[in-house]
Image (cartoon, rainbow, N blue to C red; front, side, top):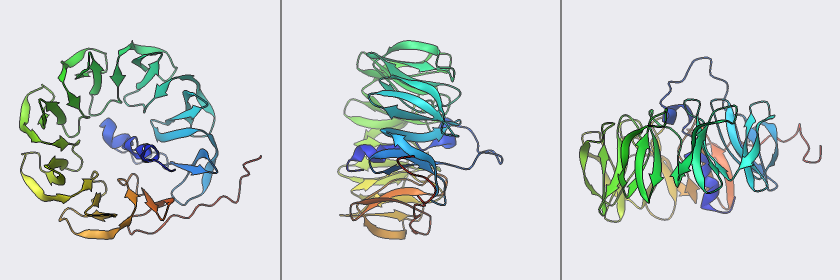
Length: 299
């Protein structure tokens, strides 16, 4: 996985949390995208590969389906490894609330799990629903739609991120702030960049450095990091200088900086890069070793 694009896998790995759906006790065991010999498959939390690497690209599972690319087209795979929606879209994202954004031709719309369009292709860009809202772009401006396709907030922003905990980061003019679901500005436009709230904290950039704010807009972790991710399971990936580590909510390093790249924890594991090798780690910083003994790339 030589590029940042590979780490965007975990941008999709917010699964139930980003969809605004509480985790159920009977939720299936998580599966994680993994690349082996240039092809993507899925492993479990113990590192056992359960879905043979066969895809050119793969996203995380959400609502029991995962977006996969074969050749130039995207479809969806089921948890048993079978193709649930044949590859037919130019781009695809995660299912949330039974809907997923896909690009058909030059426009984005939202499909149901039977691959029929619930919201016809009409947007320049569309992203997965989070907290009952999906961000979409029309005429180079961003707004938010409801699951029925109606606009909750008409396109008016130069930039926008997903809703989290009732707030969404938006850009107006040259600065970012946060709006509520009614579109009211609750944290004024004042940041160079801003990210979605997770675990009651939002990453913000002031000048050239990142820190974290609470929902009231107050800084709770000073802006001292060159890059920052999002909190999950009480930990957050940050880069204070050349390498990445993980801090807790008191800004103390729980896993010291030594990674070339790191992303947020999802279902107990985080994707990292160390010495040009990509690997998942647990919350103690231990590497999850791949178990490839039971499958063959040729079989």
